Image (cartoon, rainbow over all chains, first blue to last red; front, top):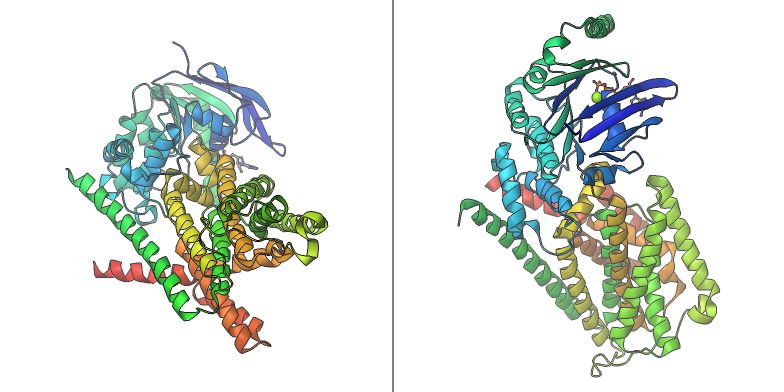
Length: 254
Length: 331
Ligand SMILES: Nc1ncnc2c1ncn2[C@@H]1O[C@H](COP(=O)(O)OP(=O)(O)OP(=O)(O)O)[C@@H](O)[C@H]1O
Ligand SMILES: [Mg+2]
């Protein structure tokens, strides 16, 4: 099966500390991959390298077969590589409708329009309405983001990413900071993602990981130590070691 | 019609209502000014010209978050363009002079934008200050064109539409100014509500997030700078047409800094804030400097400190927040 997303031998060090150590992976349309690993393993750095927010020391990133390593972050988004952020980055004074409408307009190359208000663009409003309904944000669509709950803000992050109609979606801890009572909605949103979309999700909540992913990749100290099925990951000795090590450290620190 | 379209229509009607109120307020203020200061229309016209500069500054600073202390470069370029067109090229039609101001203001906006947007924060501020000094020095040295420190004179605009003379009392200039301001205000209301305006507000808050949506903050900001230059250019041209001289002070650091002060006084990120700040600052300055020529600067300083400390959103911003707070409590 042909791949839509390939990472080859990606390397990055911050002043001597190797954070991404020779990471390679490929994804095909429809893949559901979870990237897990202890705190500080380099998961977010990996996303930043792939999206072009950080420059790798060496290695290559390919989208749909095209090498994009020299293309900037904006160019990669336009080619269908979209991410969400570990800590939500939303515009506090804007409404969910405005967020999603802006993303839709941007996707269609209309965000530079200097006349007209998106409220008077029925096609945009309809699409935004459908998307926000799907994520359960319909009733809040004209509230300011600063007035809605964090779990709903996380859903809005996903809605914005989806509005861009990506081919590859990188979700950095979509459920982080969301109260247990609200994770169900996020899980539902993840289950409803378009079938042909390739999704890589970073997540610490193992229940969510096991329900979502068909494939799990474990990153520890910048190196992939496991890449296989969810059923096998808990049995893997190296994975246990890495997690136990980090838990041991954590309990020392506590 | 479903409930969503009804809600959307209601929302649209509300914004259109606000626009009409704004237009009405400008016309009313202009009429009141005319009745209160019939002998000092020159001052009122100058307030309008500076208001255009402050609106222009609001576009890049208030809506996009660009820090600049050199914005008079755009205003001055417009003023000199209109003045030079008339004094050296015999283009004395006021509308063509205004057009010259718009064009050169936009070009100055492009140049300043390309340079200022290369940096962020403090370095950005320093770049903007360097630019205004360069523009000032250039105008000073090119004295055969600009009249140098003596100012550019010999500007005598034709009657507007061939009928309305720019008379000694300044009535024509005042009406011309009010009409220009209204036109700019309406266009800017469209602009700041458009997708582009929304994009710029997003850039101000989090440019990285905008990039993650695939949009280029740089390109949007440069576009905004060009528009801002055109608006400042209208103000500059109006000033050249109404006073019939252009001085180096129109291209000065002081003028740039004062326009920023006016913007902060009224409230950034709102067109009404820019207008309120300009009117209050310039009337206050005029009144206090006449009443107490020795201490007027002290009083202006005290007013500013009071506003920044007690109404950090500016006069208009604070008032608007208060009113919406009240309205929300009632519903
Ligand atoms: N810009 C940077 N400069 C220097 N060091 C960095 C930088 N960004 C990340 N690091 C370091 O790289 C390591 C990996 O960080 P990263 O944020 O990628 O981890 P993570 O796996 O996403 O962790 P978490 O689960 O806590 O989100 C950490 O030790 C971090 O301190
Ligand atoms: Mg992380």
